Image (cartoon, rainbow, N blue to C red; front, side, top):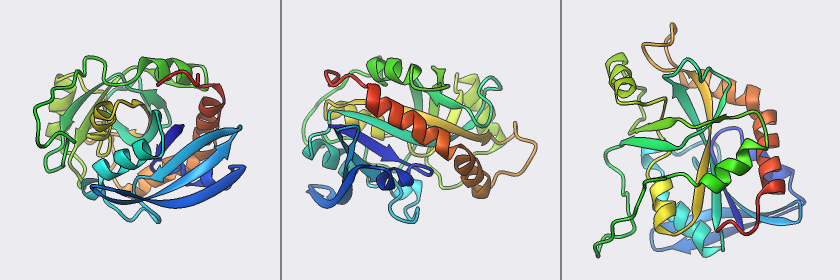
Length: 240
């Protein structure tokens, strides 16, 4: 089964499916509402990351429950969407970027399922290359980039962005971690479609607002959904 973890701009996917069944999945970390969709004769499990109405802020998302819920319904591969700011002028607002690495600056999140035993997972290649190759043929995307995850909910300062750039960061957001590493712990392939909504603080000439993010996502919604549909249609069922 394919898992979709959607931020802004992806909620409409449930209305375009051939069928949709909503279910409450109980996990050791809490209950999660999951929509089981039929799209192109494939089963797709969809979770809105911020819940209905975009009501959960990034630092309050129950990442472990979301990933565990997808695992329990049979998901083997996950595509997530993340709204990001760009620190790289070659990744302008409106771009779709498929990252290949990350820097984790989040602070107060439960980041592992392995609380009671010593397990060290390898993250030499944190994002699934097979899913990246599929996405490369599904639409106009930029392949590769380092995603920097901050705690939020505030935006970053110009000095922080300057530091992230010096460390090799290209994109900055608040929701990509620990999602990617939790999926690795649960042995599910994972990749992300990063929607660049604006240039980051100190690069943008304007004050950053959440309205700017929502406006760009709304502008790119049709294109984003088409990219996701093409992914569902073309992804190799053997990738797991």
